[in-house]
Amino acid sequence: DTAVSQTPKYLVTQMGNDKSIKCEQNLGHDTMYWYKQDSKKFLKIMFSYNNKELIINETVPNRFSPKSPDKAHLNLHINSLELGDSAVYFCASGRETNTEAFFGQGTRLTVV
Amino acid sequence: GESVGLHLPTLSVQEGDNSIINCAYSNSASDYFIWYKQESGKGPQFIIDIRSNMDKRQGQRVTVLLNKTVKHLSLQIAATQPGDSAVYFCAEMGQTGANNLFFGTGTRLTVIP
Image (cartoon, rainbow over all chains, first blue to last red; front, side, top):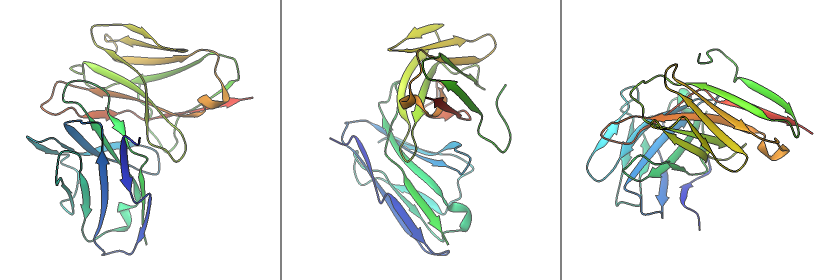
């Protein structure tokens, strides 16, 4: 019954590694998002993607890239991980019209 | 105005009292607003929303007020319960090509039994 699910829930990795976080939604939504939440709980959008366009927050380093194999999935790939990438990453989905976004449970990424 | 600084704004209330959480939003063109609740270790959960053609909306024990003149939102929780303890975020959405939600600084609500 999980609406938006992310894996893994926790990810600990060394600097310089490449990692991926997977996200799946079973709500039939057209749009999916990735958000980053820092240690002060501030939530910032990273990407918004539907089958027509990808919108990238200009502050996101190009080491981060979303990949969507199909409408129900939006995975986040991160290359050359840095200490400052440590945060909780949330996937979300929503319909195209102005409605709420539904969030996954988050992936806590720790870069050591 | 918006909270800026090193600390998450906090609000402590006694169980049974009413809580009011405030939020200033930034974009006068935003036309849809949402309050989210985030419990420890979980993702944000939808509480209530309001569109810019309204100034008040009520749910179960929650009320959202929108003042477009001063770009201000508030969330009122009636008869606050220990389970209401969480971080609360307001979020705004504008008329852009994609539906991006922009979150304000959260407020940590602590309910004292």
